[in-house]
Image 1 (tube, rainbow over the protein chains, first blue to last red):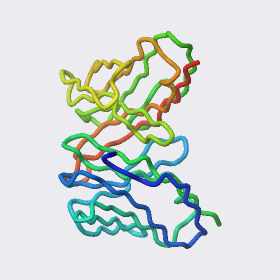
Image 2 (cartoon, chains in turn orange, cyan):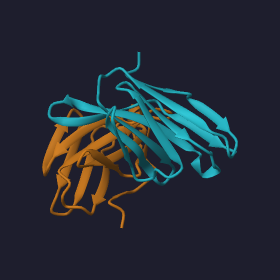
Image 3 (cartoon, each protein chain N blue to C red):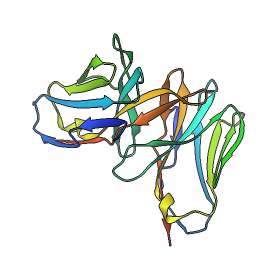
Length: 109
Length: 115
């Protein structure tokens, strides 16, 4: 079983839609959960991080962690074409990150 | 200027050749990493270094070696390249730049094709 599972997509939505991106993980010891965004031909960049369970909001983005279900989510409200990218979840495993495979998102006008 | 730079950005080489990918950072971080990214497999850790004298194998180190020449420089070598090393390679650094959470900063990537 992989430590982190993420649907690769692609996910195609119209501008203005609410997007939900998700990952599941197997190791209950993970405490820090991150979302990275990667534009085409660029390196990933940190979008949000969350410690333990709960929600964290930053503008149009909300990160949610449910440790009891080992499930993490990223919600994007009022999605824009500029949000088109690959989104990778990452879990902190004592100084190393374990990445999901990434979900490719396309927001069309 | 970019905080993390990688050279070359693109490279085509032949099976059996030795090649080196270089990474430099200006963030002053001690920790540096090399990853490869493949479609459907995501980012996988090859090697990482927590300071100049510390080198650690990652998930997929076979066929690779690294050198940490200075705090700011971390190079990855393929001693004898093979076609299944064709991938996108990323260098990253990490430090406590966003509150108390260690944040990784990635370079722009090197696209490697082994024929």
